[in-house]
Length: 385
Image (cartoon, rainbow, N blue to C red):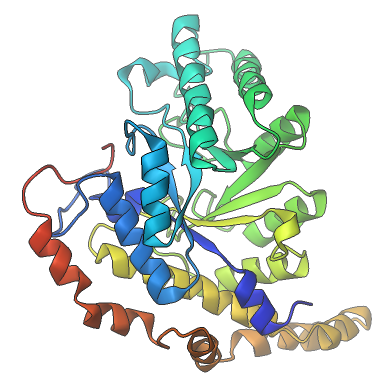
């Protein structure tokens, strides 16, 4: 089992550029002061999260929301800010052409358009040095008979195969899944099994992305994590929290015990070892909470869950499991979860020259007042821009 300090050192949490923009629910997006107006300002905000937590060294981009004329300039700016560019997220769900699907659309012209966008994202990865192409498809059908379920899977695999062949040696696909919405009858990639099957058929450079919000209530997500780790196909997490199926709330806010259970399986399966390639990403929309603070709090929540997972007495746990001691085994897990790890994390931060309280330090830094004053005029970035 990885020790506490080493485990926390290995935990790098990627923040999403869109979390710093105006984003929220389907019924309303509330605008906030100081919101970024372009990808450069999003990166500047992401750099603040890393500066105060020491655990968020990369920021994910979403294309075309973060489209720029020269991605090498954007990458250089990120490096100057102390962060790197991470996963490139494709967008094949916001164009009117995609009403009946993107890569699974019945119209070959639209399928070609969608696949070309995915290939464009790989071109961007070549410039930014990004390893991961993250794909989520809203494709699916709303009514029985609307389209042929099997044929749509064939179309999906055809597009994925073309993109897979374009990947460089050090690049990979992260195939995300979502239970429903906006396809309410049959979503083309609705669950981890569908994603896994496509990834296995594609090859070793295709792995599953587990979004912790994209499951039916009661789903045992830690079982999925353990299974994918065992198979060597867990590529990444999109961390958020939800009360139903996709609320994109701050990770650990609705069910911190679930986040702990997930991180225990990550630790148990060696997922903190960089050799496994597991990427820990946030995917959240901050609608009523301050955006940078929301990301800092989310990073801290993952750190706390991970620290508790690292404290599980694995010897006592295995002894109890092997002897059939049900309550003893459960107690070994609960003892770790019930531990207040905040002092341990404060010490970890101090050893790295960080303030033990990232939120308080950020608030006192004056950065928020600075961006509110500077970012007046122009068009604020928002969901879809």
